Amino acid sequence: MEARAILRNVPTSPRKMRLVADMIRGQKVSKALALLKFQPRASSPLLHKVLLSAVANWQQLNEDAKLEDADLIVKTVFIDGGRMLKRLRPAPQGRAHRIRKRSNHITIVIDDAAEVIASVDKQAVITES
Image (cartoon, rainbow, N blue to C red):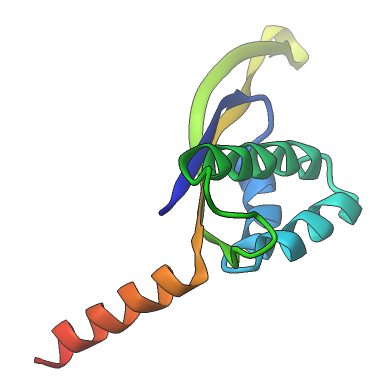
């Protein structure tokens, strides 16, 4: 059963956050946590926090299953653009340049590897028919 965690209005540009999110997509959760822990980018601790939240949500849904026995993978990670603060910066000759301070929304979905493989096999059978 899949579990999801969402963090909204993170004050980092989506483009910078996607660089780190692409590294953990499709990885095992333990490997993804290790990658995020030692990644020097500023967005890594935020993704680490959301991934831990997704693991905690999975444990809430599957109280009878052990985390060590489960082969959890990062099924999907997507970074959507959030609200944008618009500011003005003084420019020469009385002009003003617009500064856009971007934010984003992080969504991470984790699932058991066996269920992901089963769903991929089911879709392959459907497309072959």
